[in-house]
Image (cartoon, rainbow, N blue to C red; front, top):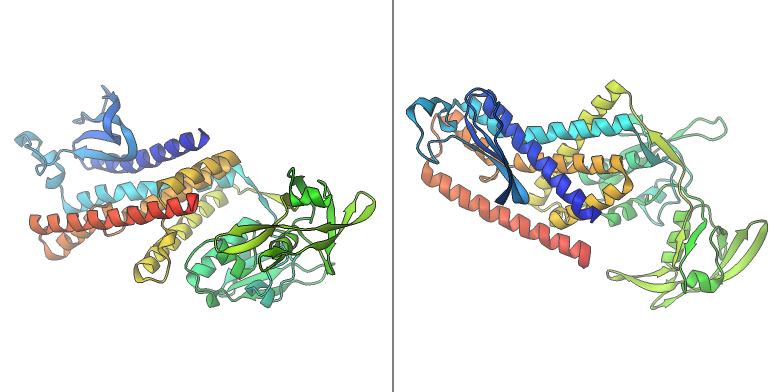
Length: 456
């Protein structure tokens, strides 16, 4: 139920803000707005305020199907217009006014993202400290000299280092670097008063196409540093049969000293010889006692790979930090994050078009609903971050030069501005059909990706 509520609230808010952008600028330009609708289909709610802007008689509607919305304006192309109202029809407006009305929807979504990111910056959010677990074997992080336990204080591209506020902040920078093909410089805090050092992650060597867990496995940084402690043990699991208990601190597996939870998870994961799990000798500290246990992980399939599992939570919660910004810094960082996410979205779309990025990056309503529920369950700030991300995606998507989207109409106006002539009705019809077909293909791919992620 939480997933459904979070999804409907997200869709309703983002669509309402988008359409309000069109509506508000249309009213400011003197265009008569006939209907403001959030959703399609059967009308669930209708309201016509008695007090409106002079000349406006807008009807506000909520439809039964929340997958979209529209602002219906007076327009000679859609029906007869009284001579005394012709100056208030959309199609009779100057080019700059029509372009402003069309662009206002996506811009409203981007402004909403700024507001949401700013609110998160002001409220503050609990995130793991940027201390690294032991990197994955043969990964870029291990090759760069990282061994686990490092505290990253600053990071940046092309030598422009900025403070790292949390592990999530560091993950975001690694994502940008991997997808953009740029090396990331990390500054590691020194120990015992010694000066820090710099490490370069050669992310330009990755040629990453998907922002997925496999990308971070190649980088080698999967999680923040955690104590190698056993959490909840499932009944009938390999952990219970081996005698492991919640609170046990793992000191070594075989001859390998264990320093963090991520390292222990990797050893469990790779404890497979062919189709058989490999027994391991664990040295465990339980209170003041040191105990030796034989643990035989269970075989599990992860896609095409076979991995080991013990049926217990591995790793204590990481050290946390509250990330909060002041009034001015909060707004500025909200603007910067909106710009960064927008730019990364545009680059990913461009890479998908030319084949440098996988179409698996497209997500549809099922994935959005799933993330809406998960983020809402984590608290207000995580849900606001989710809303900001989707709002950016909606704004950028609508600015794409597809005929059925706002960006397509802006392309028509660009042509009109350059040639002095509007696009002919015949070409308009052809372009609209092509745009609908392309949009249906994108939606089909996104829905297929959703089903594969959630049920495959």
